[in-house]
Image (cartoon, rainbow, N blue to C red):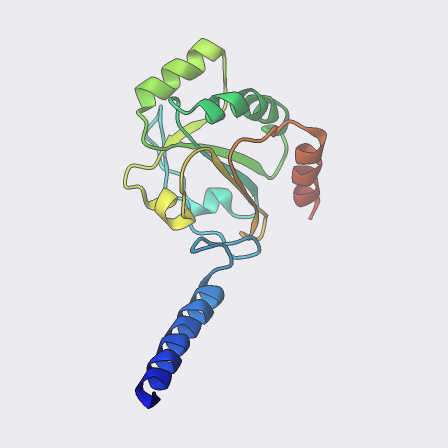
Length: 175
């Protein structure tokens, strides 16, 4: 009986330790959560091959969307992302980065051309950005504020050209 109590206590302490460690490390099931510093972005422009430097993003609101041309929910949100890009790309302090996930630049760029989309497309050659952000699938979108803090994480598609989404981004730009 004493052995069973000791074993139960040891198991409970181990589980409590794991839960506490996970809670302190993140707030989103193993992924960086909202209000945490956003990881660095390591991507390369799909057309020019030029990488994005940390200095280019410093002090900017960054809209980071992970997508693929084979992904139906991605295709459903693409018109709103392109509309958002067309209206927000001129805003001082805004940067849109869309990153291919398990897709080829050729397929994605061909799809974009057929649809008339104009937003920039990047690749994540080493998978570093997807790994650092804890991408579980596509689409996933991360909005990073001017201080480099993750302000919003959206798993799945969303209407990014809605008044609410644009107001949220405008609020971040004014901060």
